[in-house]
Length: 162
Length: 426
Image (cartoon, rainbow over all chains, first blue to last red; front, side, top):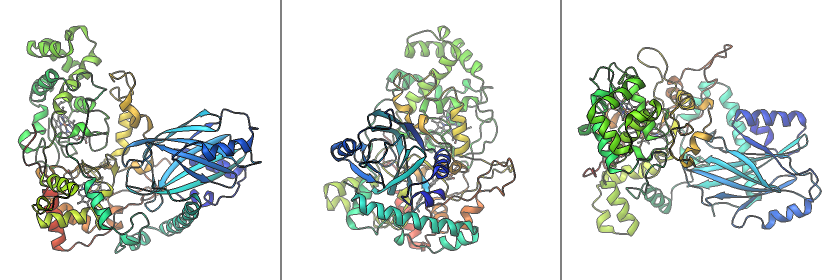
């Protein structure tokens, strides 16, 4: 996935890059959903939610966001669908993310998932993604894209699945 | 928890991304570079698979059981699990009256004595088809059906051959007329579905015929194999019982879950992850046309009236429709075929979607010598002409040249043979 090389540097990107991410998102079957809340939620409180929000889950971070996420079921089964609950928290002073996308891939095999997850907002900073599937055992990378205004940044997390 | 700390992961993610950029730069130089990379490459250095420890080998072996796995009747089929439906479905399965000229039944190709296949490279109904007949044993556990996953339920897979001009060549009209007019079929229908076939619309009646046949095929579950006995003995730490498993099969099993990495795709109790891949079998048909496999399968699925998203799904909650709802039509799907389950595989020769490999030894030799050139030659690729619908570049594969020696080849075959049921459960 060539575009991944640029975006995985976790720097804030300009509108042009944001557009590229969106294009890649469509090409690679990404799902995104607009957040349901206004862009001025109290950031500090939200970041606090990420600290305690999803017991037993994990956390990925990018420059401006913390993403608490938890797979459902918690132990991701190979070759079966699973869902992911997300809590996206801006770090203090950062803008609230207005769109979120989720995808996953196997970096060492150069392929992604065979399914396009759907993501819907389910509360303040909260999302639920459905329809993911890891169809091989091995190392998978979960990829979260966060958009605020015309900037997009990416957080990734690698895990072993067996 | 399989997860490490976020910071470490972020660094690793970055390292991987850089590695990936390197790889795609190389790949961009063309197939020659790619083949140089694949031949002789050893999986040991791959980040996806750390060298196998005893514990991870044991875990991988245990993952191929228990057998049979728990399962419940298909909620999309209101007569699934009904004994009366299975009896009626059994009758229909062996009945040539559903074909256009009364000469072909399901059992023409799915022959019980041959493991519900036909021993031919490609199936022959009213005319030769392009694909090898799949067994219907254990099909109840599938997520997708057929080599390209063109159907998403056992009942939809069961009505598909009725309409294929080279299989049974019928029309929906012909099938429903038969069931309404032939007294034994009409009374069979009424007994199973609780109403006369005359009072049901054509589409519904046609789907119901598939559902009765599905109820029968769902009873076909393979029996336990020598491998299952070994696997369960391993699970309970019974060394005496483990020792009964032949030494060559055991070495083959260790290769299967170890160096050969067969279980990346042939995963779990059915020895399939239920998904699609390419293993270097040509997509060209004998007549020169191309079988695009999964890509065509998804398109057929998405335009079918009989998919789980359509009105014939009997489950109002559509619990089993998740895969259909989320499936992605990607470029990678071109030329992919469903990873076959391997239970009873020794009984269902010849092999692969086109039946091009005659024996299990041929299959293992194929994997042993596979390389990027073979993978590349199996797939035509676009040179970028406008409007060209072909995939733009060869996609990556997890397969590596294995260079197995003769004993290793025999061991893998012995392992595959140990997956045959001792006694049918049927």
